[in-house]
Length: 170
Image 1: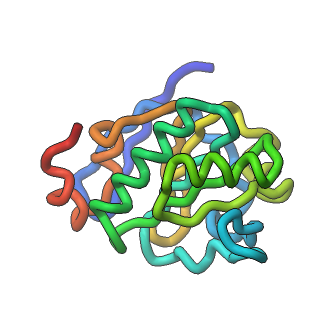
Image 2: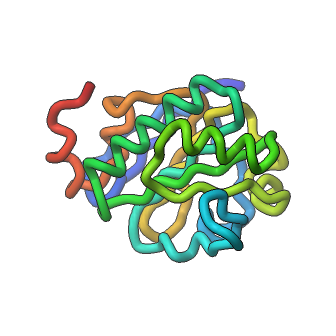
């Protein structure tokens, strides 16, 4: 698949150019789903996170790169607080194995189990893990990327209010 150049105005900042695989069709707004919660009983609507940018990472058990991405998002959540919302969505594993990964990563943000409806909305399959979707504060998908991304690579996507908190990126 050829690379494409995407130019976005992200969170009111100067335009940035993103190199990404062509965007898959997302058949609904990113937050229009109710997913089974991993850390608590029951389900939760992702609409609750409307109003701030959302970084949603798909992970699976025994994926070392997923573990690293979840840890990086933990750092983002620590440093950015209420400026953004990280979400982990488990796939390709039983609930107990997914929960074990979440506990091992010691994440400080919600985790869920992917539903067939969500997977269908993102094109019918998760291309690889970790796979991250990023929405603006209205729940509109602005970009996605495969593989592990450092905080430094994520920084241009962050809200302005969070930029100063990440002045020293490792």
